[in-house]
Length: 272
Image (tube, rainbow, N blue to C red):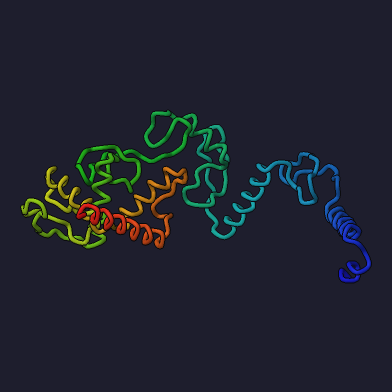
C-alpha cells in the first residue's frame, strides 16, 4: 500500500496521511480525559491520569502490594499471633517471619524515635548502624571501635597501604631474595615477582645515582618513553596537548629516526 501511495501522492501528502493515522491511533488507545475514581486501598476519590490509575498515591499502591505479599506469606508459613511491641498499640497480628515484632512500619519508626539517642548501635534518627565493639587493628595493633564484623583495620592510610602491599605479595607468591645493589654493591632484600620492587639498597645517594643512570640509558637508546615525552612537550608548545598513550607507535618510530639522524649530524660536526 505504501508503494502505491508513493507512486500516486507527493511526499508532503504522504506524511500528512501518516500523521493523521498516528493521531487517530493515539487518541483511540488513550482518551484525553478520565473521570473520578475511588482508590482501591484507602477509598478516597481522585482524578484518573490514565485508564490504569487505580490508587490515589504511590504510598497507597505500595501499602496495597505489601499487604497482599504479607497475606500470601502467612498462608505459606503460618505463625502464631503475637502482640505489637508498641505500648500505644498492643494490637494482635500474624507475623511474616520470626523477628517480626511490630504490626506496622509506623509503630517501628515511632518506637525508634522515642528511644534514647545515645543508645548503642542507633543514630539520632532511629536507624540501626551496628553495635560498637573494641577491636585491635590487624596491621598496627592499635585499639579502635568498629561497628561491622568485616572491619579489621583502624582506617589510617598507612595501615591501608601496608594491607594492600601484603595482599598483593601473597596473591603473586612474592618471596624475599638477597641481591647486590647495582650502585654500591651492598646486599639487600628484594621481593621477587613484584613489579614495583626496590631497584637499589634504599640509600638516598644510590637512588639518585640509579635515576641518573636510567635517564642516561634512555637518552642513549632513545626508548619509547623518552621519545614520547619529547613529542608530548613539542605538541604542548604547539597548542595540542596529548597524553603519551595517545601518540601512535609509527610516529614514535619516525621521531626516533629523526633524533638519531640529528645526533649523528652533531657528531660529524664535532669531528670536523
